[in-house]
Image (cartoon, rainbow, N blue to C red; front, side):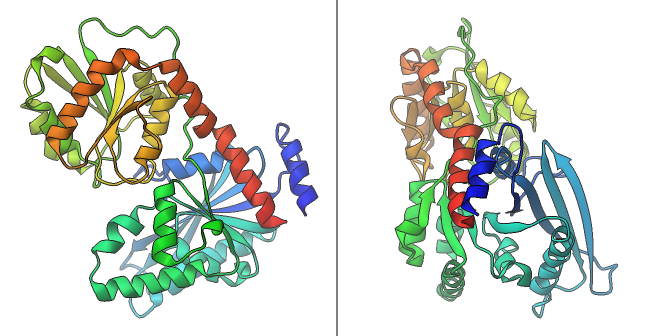
Length: 406
C-alpha cells in the first residue's frame, strides 16, 4: 500500500494514480454562509495533487413537515474537489434520534460512494457535534483516520461549562480520542496541542503541527509605494465572538492626531458590523472606516497588497488564517498575544498586545505606525509562503496520510 501512495506523490502533477480520500468537514462554504469553513476548504485543496478528494459535509435542518426525518443529497465539483452535501431534515431531535439520524445521513452517502471508490482511510477536519459521530459508522470502523483540529472550543467554551457539564464533556472527548483507529491529530498551533495533551491526557507523540493554508492569491506585490496622504490598514474576519471589532473602534478613539489620516478597510460579515457602525462613525475626521462586506479571496488579497498592515482584534484564536494570508502579502500584523497567535507574529513581522484592553491596542497601533518602515515586506512574504502555501501544507498532509494508510 505504501508504494501506491508514493507513486501517487510522484505522479501528482499529472493527477495520475491518485488514491481516493474521504474528507469529513465540520464546516463548508455555502451560498447562505460563504465564509463558513473557508480554511477547511484550503486544506482539502492542498491535498488535491496527491488524492482524489471527496469532501463530505453534513448539516441538520429542523423540519416540522417531515414525519421523522428525511435525507437529501447533493454533489458538486469545486476546483477539482468532489463536494458531497448531506442535509438531514428532522422533526424531533430528542431521545437519541438526532445522532441516529445523523449517522443514517452519513451512512447513506458512504453506501453510494463505496460502490465506485475504494477508501483506505479518511480525514476529519474539526471534531464537531456532527463529525464526532463519523468513526462509529459501521462502514468506517476498521479504517484508520486522522483529525485536523482548529477548534477553539477546547480552551474557550469547555472551561466555561459548569462542573457537571464539563466532567461529562471531558469524559466523552477522552473516550473519542482513545479510538485506536485515530492514528494522528494535527493541531494548528502549539498552544492547541498543549491544551489537548494537558486536558485530555493525550500523548504528545500523537499530535503533530499543521499550518492553515493561505490562498494562492495572497502574495507580495513588488514595488509597493505607501500612499503619501494616509495610512491604510485592513481588517478581515467573520465578525462574531471572539473577534473584537468594538475593541478596535474604542482604541481608535483618542489616537494621537500626529499619526495623520488613517483609513481602515473592514472586510467580512457578522453581527458586530451593524452593532459597531455607530462607533466607527463617531471616531473623528482623522479616521475613515470603510465597510466592504464579504468579498472573494482575490479581492481581499488585492486590498492587502495596497495596505500598510493588518489589524486583527480578537480575544481567543488558535491560528487565524487571515494572519497567514496577510503575511504572505508581506504585511506586518497588529494582534493580540493569545493562544497560537504569538507563534505566528513576532517582532520581525508585527506587534502583539494584551487582549481586551483598548488602550493597549491603541498603544500597539502607535508602535506599529512608528516602525512601519522597518518591516521587510518581501522577507515577511517569503517566510510566510514557506509555511502557509498550499504546496507546503499539502506535502505535510500527504506525508501524514501515507503513514496512516500504509
